[in-house]
Amino acid sequence: MTLAVRKQERTEMLLKTIDWLGVMTVRQLQRIHDLGSYRNACRIVSQLEPYLHVARGREKVFYLNKEGRELIGSDKEVKKSMQIEHKLLINEAYIYFGCPGDWRTEYRIEHKEEIKDIIVRIGSGKSVMKKWIVADAYFGGNIIEIDNTRHMKDNMKKIENYREIFKLKKINPQLYFFTTTIQRKQKLEKWLAGMNHHVLTFDEIQ
Image 1 (cartoon, rainbow, N blue to C red):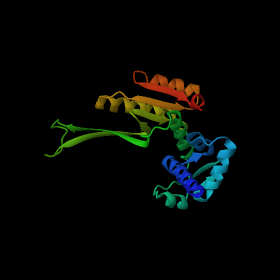
Image 2 (image 1 turned 120 degrees about the vertical axis):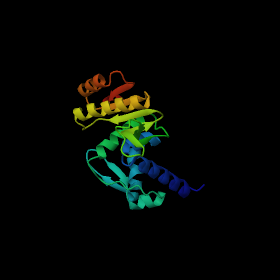
Image 3 (image 1 turned 45 degrees about the vertical axis):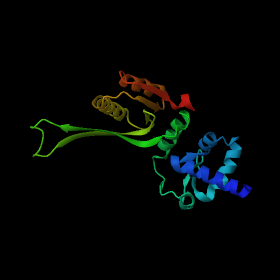
Image 4 (image 1 turned 90 degrees about the vertical axis):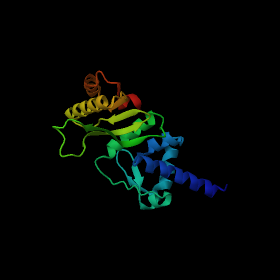
């Protein structure tokens, strides 16, 4: 295999990782692909820049541009938004768990149940009760929630929704919350009492 072919394979491998996670930082790509020193990782990312949108701020953030998507055959377009920081924190959880192969983001958990009470049913057809919730991420029976800018009352409401759906589905999965401060961690742990849960701050995993 020639040097040019090896370089092309590495380029496509790195671009596929960026596409998989949507948006990344240099340090995240460095850790996932063991790119050596931070300086070396920056050099490699600079070589990828023809295929990337790059935002430079406190830390360089990048995602695929049209050329990058076309090179690896991806139709997943990422646009700059207020959700970028949230996506980067999801990446931190992904790395913390060892980059699981069955990792899924925005994972929908749904419960459907036929309503048998004739008073509730409408007409002669079947009526179905449907409840659902969207987790930030999921892998191997583990549900992941990222709490960075969410109001605490919204966290409490989402936890209660999880509690209800788990009860309906008769499941008890591991629910992980990653949050920003010890104070928020303590509140989340109180609300999650009785559920199979684990709460960590980002300082504890980075």
